[in-house]
Image (cartoon, rainbow, N blue to C red):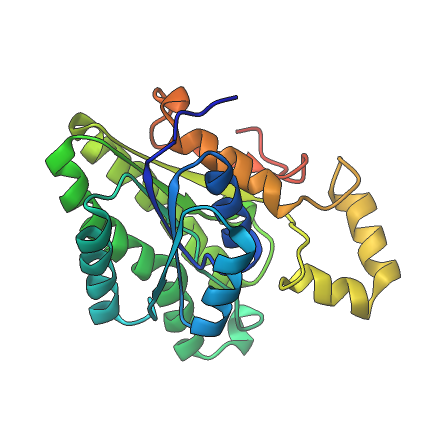
Length: 253
């Protein structure tokens, strides 16, 4: 399907590896102008080389509010406008609630939630000028139901809630906001890869018991759904949280 994304300016945080890189690859295949953000310049340059196409790189630590502001300013100055923002950067930390220090709760919220909120607000100010745009937040099925680490769940749940609030607020400006909630995704730099290597039989049982599709998801499957949501083909999807999980989620909604 031609998603009519050719020439659109796409900004992807955490875009140098894993799910973010796979999302970038899909947009490259759609002939969009893709920009990826990460802290490490070496990984950014490597990803740019591997992705091919029209890819730009921006080095920024999105945990830093000043760098988030500079990122959007630099992006708009270089590209002229922002059409699509993908808030993909994130990560988990800590353990059970009573075994996790408070600083890890704050850190998880800054990385997974506050950074996405801030960058979204900055992007909306530019999107409003053109009365169009799409923002997609990469969350998790564990932001919709229990599972995973408590700090991560809390932050992703908050981001799903923010997605709906912002979506209703800005759709009148032609800006759509949605979220994609991946299930367990296997890729080279992810936690599932590490767990699989450490305990292959245990992870095999996990997949059998917890994922009806009988396998892990791939980063490309997240990328495909994200690109569709960013396109005008999804013009009537506003404020949604879309599970991409092979049936792993136990929710009815």
